[in-house]
Image (tube, rainbow, N blue to C red):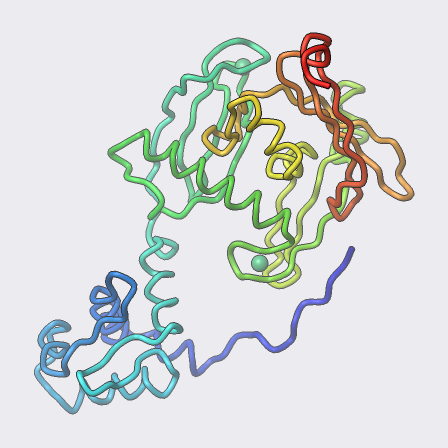
Length: 306
Ligand SMILES: [Zn+2]
Ligand SMILES: [Zn+2]
């Protein structure tokens, strides 16, 4: 399915110029620091002047006016505060997108690589977190992660950041929503390994391609990704005491079989999720709509439950 990007959003020179100034960014940072407990905090003019280190009130007024003209800051009876638009600029800066990227890891995880049995590891580099097997020299997952999502001094926080980021992105993308710009996301199947030097099973394996219609962010994932948060799989796991979201998507505690193609026109791809002999099979189309759900219980369970 292909959606048209909206044409009412674009680059606005005046809006960008208003924040492309050190003093005005310091005003935004100072006002952002008083947003607390779900409320927009306010700073008095004199307090703001002192905070940003300006001694000239005319200068301060000039910069505040620039920010107010573009709707980043508003004046209230108590002083000045950020608007939602101003808060978005503050959040963008605080997320670390404009900061240098720390290089962290690799750290070993308590998860083994299925292929070789050696521990998997994670590391952070260039604004991405990578899950990989150093022994096999393969990257299993690479996900963008803002520097604000973890503390470089605490390896477990990188793991937590990766876990939260990947489940959030999974939920957003499978809902057709871009986590980064808010745009609509198109989905489709593709065979990225066709014609390459891989085994036959991998060569014929379809993947999902997600493409944002607005910012053009893209991601390629296994088809199983689309079912992890589907209600049928969630309830299958819940009945077995498993909450997939507690685990790194690198290695979930259920067995996931390779996708099978039932038809290409229209697209029908099945994925089976299994646990201790029970399984559930979902059939997806290229919008990731589920058309069919088959459940298979192990003989013991089918005897016990009608
Ligand atoms: Zn390995
Ligand atoms: Zn986007």
